[in-house]
Length: 81
Ligand SMILES: [Zn+2]
Image (tube, rainbow, N blue to C red; front, side, top):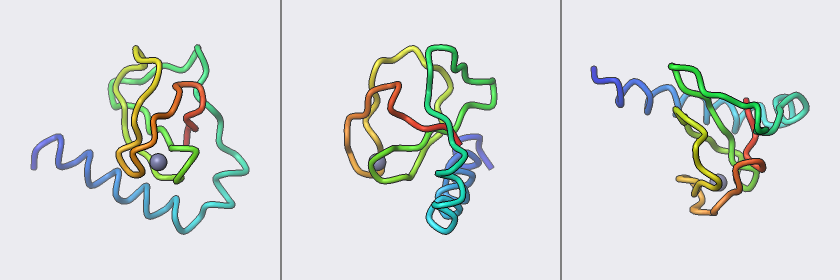
């Protein structure tokens, strides 16, 4: 199994969780701030539009297109799991 396959599998599991448990995690999630750093294992960020997410491995970007709903989201609008 390649690393990218592992990441895709993890993302699918987390996104299923987000779909099923949306109220629970929305109550506790944080937004990306200027202090947010990705670890070497990546950081899971959640789109505020469609509440699905993806792993990122650095935060040296100012906006990112959600791969689930194709919306361009500003860095500090992304939520953290
Ligand atoms: Zn989205």
